[in-house]
Amino acid sequence: MNEFSSRMDSGAGAGGRLPLGLIDPEALVHLRADFTRFMLDYQFGIEEMKTKIEILRLEFLHLHEHNPIEHLNARLKSPESIIAKVARKGLDPSFESMREAITDIAGLRITCSFVSDVYRVAEMLTEQDDVTILAVKDYIAQPKSNGYRSLHLLVQIPVFLSNKVASVTVELQLRTVAMDFWASLEHKIHYKYDHELPAKVREELHNSARTASELDTVMENLHKQVHDESRSEPRRDGSLVPPDSVLELLRQIRTTRD
Image (cartoon, rainbow, N blue to C red):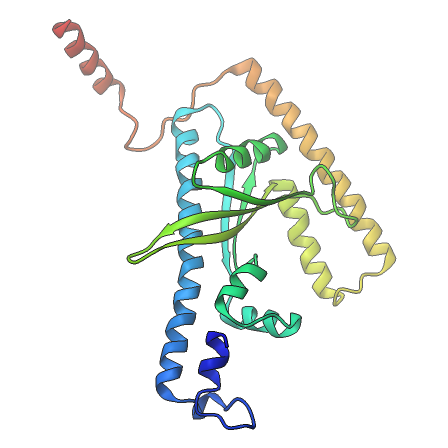
């Protein structure tokens, strides 16, 4: 018997589960703690991935000519949504089974400037020693039938807790600004029509996805052209970057000691 059924049935007779108000209070306390611990694992997984991405963003911001990361959004599926999915799909309601069966509890969306940036950031993240790739779905190379384009990665990372190391699955979606704009509007239109899109709307959405893809290509070509011509210095904002006076003082000290 799994931890859900054993605790939910505690105090119930042959008729089955009792309403929450009638469940043994001690069992309810343990179940709430277990569920909270389950959710925290995924929240911490999100924080770990956010830290990795923020480190890359800051490195490129201060040390490189081009920062490939435009925006970062995180999402944690609510307990209500998780249990609704368990019920809808008839999944085993144990926490261990939910970890294996539901892979989109923790998610991050990384918005990049250009298509090449999407693959570059994905490569930098997945080459880190503690990131394990579970699955890759490249909807940029092979868009969905409705025109949706994005790179999806399912990864697993360790989260170091006080009494254990939890392996947490996190879904990453990487896309360009144009892809993100299209996907956001497409999502709103789907809800407007209750997921039953008229043929004309589907066609226009597909055409607009192709236009967004063409825009990505044009803008990346322009970026390469301007970048090759100007070779500008990286932006030097923030207190981490030493001013010229500090650099000159350091140069003088080194010269004196040499």
